[in-house]
Image (cartoon, rainbow, N blue to C red; front, side, top):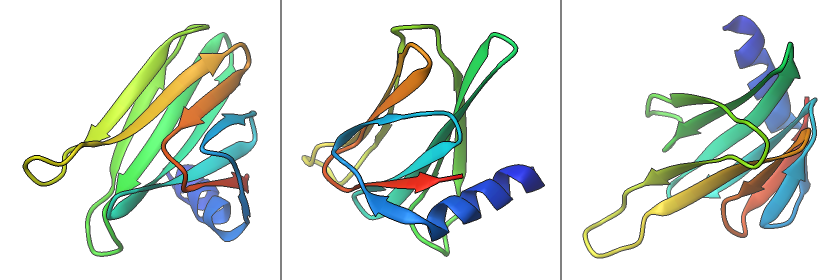
Length: 114
C-alpha cells in the first residue's frame, strides 16, 4: 500500500497535458478530471497479469475509492460516477490495447510519469 501511495503522490507531482483518449504505457499514470473530483489510473503488466488500478476521489476531504481490474487484450472496464438527477454520469473507460492501456475520460486528462 505504501508503494501505491508513493507512486500516486509522485504521479501527481509530474503532470503534462495529454489528449482526451490517451494511451498509457507501463511506468506511467494518468490523472483524469471527473466532474467534482479526479481519478489516477496506472497499470502493471507482470507474470501474465495486466492489472489496472484506479483511485477516485471527490476532493481532499473525501475518502478515496480504489478499483482494480485484470484485463485481457481488447477488454474494457467502465467506472461511472453518478451526478445530480437528470445529469449524465461522469464516465471513465479503460481499455487494454496489447501491452498498453487506453484511458478515455473526457478532455481533462493529464499524463504523469511514475
